[in-house]
Amino acid sequence: MIGAGIMTATLAVLLKELDPSLQIHIYERLPEVAAESSDGWNNAGTGHSAFCELNYTPEKEDGHIDISKAIKIAESFEESKQFWAWLVQRYFVKDPNNFINNVPHVSFVWGEENVAFLKKRHAALTANPLFAGMEYSEDVDTLQSWMPLVMEGRDPGERVAGTRMALGTDVNFGNLTRAMMHHLDRRDGVQLFLGHEIRDIERAADNSWEITVKDLIRKEKRIIHSGFVFIGAGGGSLPLLEKSNIPEAEGYGGFPISGQWLRCLNETVIEKHRAKVYGKASVGAPPMSVPHLDTRVIDGKKELLFGPYAGFSTKFLKNGSFLDLPRSIEWDNIFPMLSAGWHNLSLTKYLVQQVSQSMGDRIEALKEYFPEAQAEDWELAIAGQRVQVIKKDKEEGGILEFGTEIVASADGSIAALLGASPGASTAVSAMLDVIEKCFPEKLSSASWQAKLKELLPSYGQSLSNDPELCASVRAYSGSILGLEHY
Image (cartoon, rainbow, N blue to C red; front, side):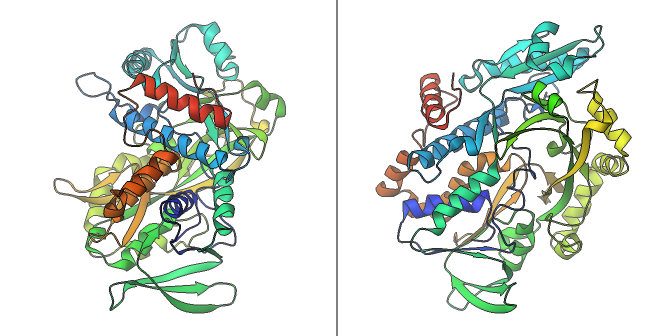
């Protein structure tokens, strides 16, 4: 397994529980685990459950709100919570509040058109049990109680609306990953190699995978062989997938987008806000750039962030190389990448605008959500690097795919996870997909099915179609994780 982030940790725990005899080696190029996209400061930590993210519920041309993606993400997050509850029950993760805490999820809009959209969105979502209890309000006093910083100093004549889910969460995926890796590192048959970089992946004569590993500390290379490889290296997954030369990887490219936050330094301001307030993205903006005024709980301390502000870098990782993007361009993906660029000129324009922003411009953007913000209370912080997936498309040549995608070989011997948001929040569902693609026969066995039912009480069932099951599952995970669940 390549990369010591939330995805690898999740897959390794799942597989080791399903088959304790497995020998698992985890390789990470950095000297510590969870230092890239999984780190608490490098992602939004929202616990993406589609409660507040407006980009997951697009309004179609006929005027109806499409909630299908929101349902899928909400179900996936409930699956993640069940798995985390099991980890806590087994003492694999000791203190749930070290990685997950209740922070209400709020959507906020202004203007007649956006208010109408939010009202329709609320009606569509609350018809589904996953979103039962979502509040909607246009009342200024109610909105003031939900998010005082957002409402103070706002034009009283402005039409505004909000929705709120009290069961929203903030997740420190870095702490969660470190806890799982600590557990794995103590298990027989699992070895964690830090400061080791994968340089090449090739098919061996016996059809196993021959992997070239560089020990960055000792400056030594060695060759290892494995029957199964998982590439969970965040933005670094695409270059490694290309080295495998599997047909399924042909045509895939990546477009890197860097992120920045404004971090609040004023403790009084931080204490006045406890919510994740999401708005609507600018035209042409990628989903990861949906603006939010965001309460975080990082290492036991309450923080307040606003952003993210998108930027462009040719690096695929925060600790990557500026040559990552040019090196990823090959004959099979150059046309899809050029086509995707042509069809997303608005994104290019948006990124140029973001990169050229001054601190004053960023503060002005903040004031749309916090009208009384003072520049001296905020500093700029660098977030993680994301690589949006580009893939072949019969009609357009190439498309920019927002979200996460699993690419696996036909024989199931190698799989890679590409993409960004909602990412970490849906790690359990994503890794179950890897297991389904790569270990289909074992997955169908009675022993693996029974174990998955133990790990995930709702495994194989739909929460969106069963209000009682949804409520009971939330009560189960919520009680163990110390979260609201009603």
